[in-house]
Length: 92
Image (cartoon, rainbow, N blue to C red):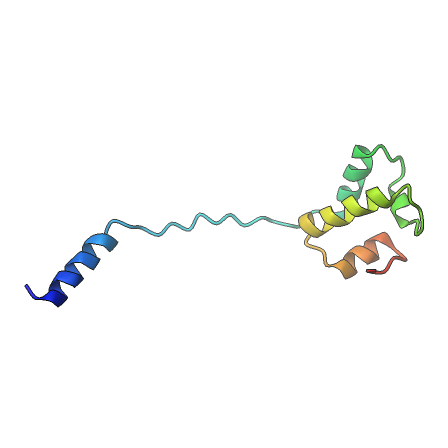
């Protein structure tokens, strides 16, 4: 046996026992933004979901921040889309 055959035999013996398994799980991000807002409002004990549209209110800033994060994660929204949902709020 030559050296090249030895190397080929070694490579073949190492690669035969492995099998590629794609265990990737794709998350479906198609939730309705109204459902996300109502769930966050229920968690934070906010009676009206439309309070998120109040622009300079400190009382709803936590509600707005959590809602923006969840809209980004669960609904696959961009910042521009989140601003449209919140209404009269820009990205900054």
